[in-house]
Structures are given as structure tokens and as C-alpha cells.
Length: 283
Image (cartoon, one colour):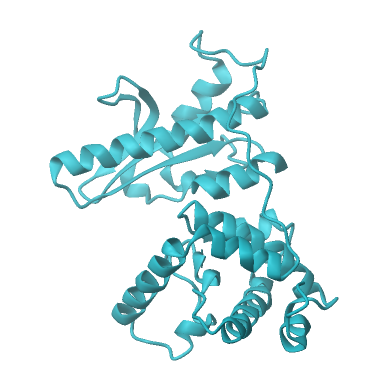
């Protein structure tokens, strides 16, 4: 920390308690998300921090919030509540424990408050976020490599494997395996997008268009990384279609995999905001 850091701020975030250590690890991740203009789910942040229970993030995020409030007083400016980027997967909103929601506003007000706070987080200058990390003696996260490593196990556009076909057909019949309502079944397999791409499975009704890219248990890390980027592409295409149609439905793309997501790909998933459903078991 810099010499001008007050002892009160240092005490908040520089201690040896587990939640303080985790706060120092979490803040650079949140800065990364702010610069990428993306929220992050509690469970995903916990996984990246190797925390077994996302509920314990309350103390971690509270520590960050308190430290930023103190630093703001020292700098004589309002530092946006970056901890508001961490949201619940069901509501897409932060928990009521964050500083700016402790008055427990009604649901309509809550959404408006969160939108205003996140707007300030995303518009806060990059140089300021980096200054904050430096003030706390922290370094930014390492840049992520977008390159797709070649893999001899990757089949490219060759023949579809039996494992991939089996998983694709299972997901199409079981939308609950990717967190969707069973009323969406069956999904349409090999759905053609206007871009010429074919989505493994598309679920749609009046309220949503959800593309699912599937990767079977024979997929290696390079192919799983490719799948994350495919979801980014499909999401953008579906949202472009929505704009052309003047629609208001949800448009998104998900990755469904039979195994675990490699540790190295967790920051990639989180930064790009792609939902990954793991350990899907074909029954």
C-alpha cells in the first residue's frame, strides 16, 4: 500500500483473516469485470477464488465495499460500488447485503438503483481502477490469451462423434439440464442462424431464444475454449436478430459440457459472461 494509505483502510483489507485475503484476491477480478463491462455470478466468482461456499462471499464483498468507502473519503471522491457486479444467477441482481441496497428498496426501485450503480462502475476510468489496485498494493489480473491452441483431438468440421450427437440430443430433450424450463422441450438441433452458423440446440418460445453449444466428454481444453467463444458469437447473432425483429425476448447462448471446466478457462468464462453447465449426465 502507498505511504498515504490511512491505518483504518489498511486495517480493513490488509489483515490476515481469510475473508481479507479473499477480498485482496477478489478485487482485481472485479476490476477485470468492470473493464470488460460484465457482471459475475456469486458461484462463478467463488469458483475462481476456489471458495467452496459462495455464501461466504458476503464478508469478502463487504470488506471490499468498506475499503472503497474509506478510500473514497481519503480521495474526497465517490468510488463506485464495484462489489455490485456480483449477482445472483436467478435474479441477476446483487444481494441485499451490499452497501447501496441495505435500505431494502422495493423490487422496482432495486433494479433502478442497481442499474445506476453499474453504470457508474462501467464508466469509471480504467486508470482510476488501476490506481485503486495500486493503492491497496494489488496487481491487475493477468491478460487472458484469446488464441485457440491447436489440438490434435479437435475434429474441426469433420464427422460428428457419437458422443457429441448423444449429448446434443439429450440436451434437446432435457432443457432442465441447462437451467431452462421443461416446457421448452424439445429444442431444435442443428438450428441454422442467418450468419450461416449451425447451433447444436436452440430453445425458443415467445419469451426467449436460447442457443446451446454442447461439448462431450472427449472434448479437450482447446475445444472447450472454442465453445466459450462460439457462445459469445451465437449470443451476439441472436441479439442482432432480436434488434431486427424489434423483439423483447431473452436472447442468450449457453455451453453444456459433460465434464468439468478446466481451471484455466474459469476466468475466460467469467470475463466473457458465458453460462457453462457442467457435469451433464446423459441418462
